[in-house]
Amino acid sequence: MTTKKQPPAKRAPEEPAGRPENPFISTEFFSRMRDYTERDAAFSKEIKAIGDRGAGKLSTDARTAPSLEPLRGVIKKGLPLKDMFGRIVQGVESGLWEPWMAAFGFELRGVNYAKTGPRNARLALDISLASKATTVFANAGIPNWRSLVAEDCAQVQIEKPTEKTPAKAYAIFWLDGAE
Image (cartoon, rainbow, N blue to C red; front, side, top):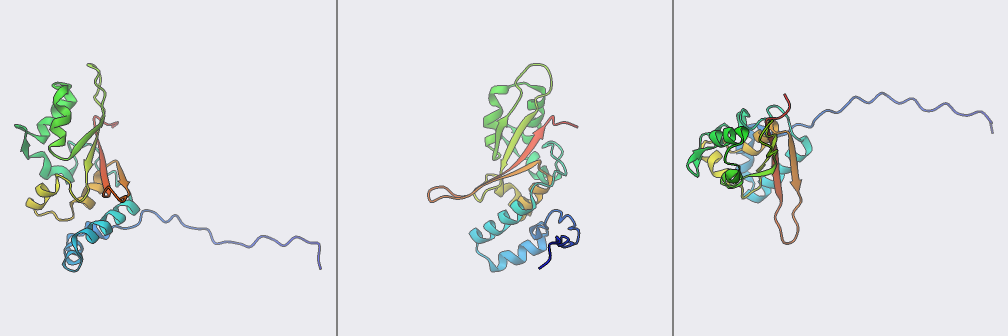
């Protein structure tokens, strides 16, 4: 028996893994998968891939995010979404902001209501199975819209299902965000 300490085992330096890939970004893959998978299972797989990959933060301002282009032209409550975003940024008609956003599947999670300075609104787009935005994207021919939106957004929030509530997922965007 020796009294000398053994040198620590040398480990190969670990390379950072980076963000895992989300195969659902490919429309072709999404379409093939949907041919063989029922709706709820397909949604669960896509949300899991989105959760593993996280938010892409490619275009976090809801006014310019390419993935939200089909939504910005839709007119609800008498205005297109792009005009609603503009009015939020200007700070006018603040009492109408929440009902406007709800018509598109957005929640207004936080906003600066001060008359001066930027609004810094935090918008959460519902990307759950029963999202109001699903119809707009389906009409535009974008079946994998959840994955595309997750690449643009600033943050992804996923709430696990319980016995009484279904899974909920949100893509968080900003208006007047730090530039």
